[in-house]
Amino acid sequence: MNFLLRKHLIKMNFFLQILLFLLFIYLFILIFTYFFQRNLLYHPGENNYFGDKLIVSIERVQIKTKDNLKLLSWYHRKNLDEYKTILFLHGNAGSLENRIHKINHFKNMNVNFLIIAWRGFSGNDGKPTEKGLYEDASSAITWLKSQGIKESNIIIYGESLGTGVATEIAQNKNFAGIILESPFTSMIDAGKDKYPYLPVRLLLKDKYESDKKMKNINIPVLIMHGKVDDIVPFHMGEKMYKLANQPKYSYFSKYDDHMMEYNEKLLKALKDFISSLN
Picture 1 (cartoon, one colour):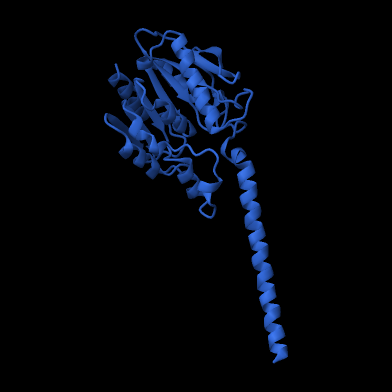
Picture 2 (cartoon, one colour; picture 1 turned 30 degrees about the horizontal axis):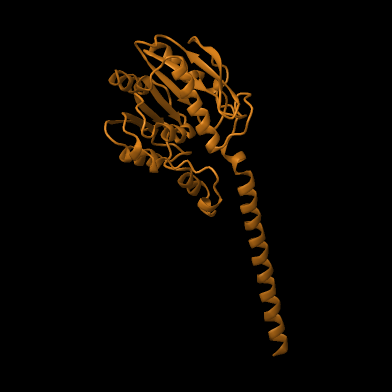
């Protein structure tokens, strides 16, 4: 009997050690994720596109924020009186050069545009955070107004992570319209989708809860999303469209991934939306 009991205790002790080891590993993952989560979210050094050359004229400008950072930005001024001005808020990875393949198409549209690089991106000082990116976008709006551009002539364009910033700054404002490309409902939902084994809501510092803000946006909305997006699930774009107030428009592409292709169909959706705002 003592032999069987001793054997049972040894087995129990072995399983307890395994359990404690797994618990230690899980706690390590939680601690690592909490302290390094912004390195997982923001990727200023990641470049998705190389070799594209600007065919649209731009002026390199510096936009000063309230916390005294200077943000590299590209400004294209075609006709401020006749055309709307797009404020382009890019995603969580790469530099301004990575968006050349998109903004080149603005050359053939009746728009002016300003594309800003976030703090910590494209050589800018500072470190990206949710609060910091909100400040960057607000500073860009202030700069546009200093150029004589009315709020009602500005179109907010958010790309991926930039949609979280776009929905924040568009609340209760009188902008001409808002474009959301590959939007997520919240970073909480996106995190749960990627890391279902983590208590994302408790860990997350930058939540970007766009779904809670859509009800406060009362300007025309265009939502674009690819149905095979493997980074931000398509159902999030669908939900954002359902939450949006009228007038609202959608361009849902059957074959596009997260990086949507700027083909004739997408460009037509953009042009039609911009024309509807005039």
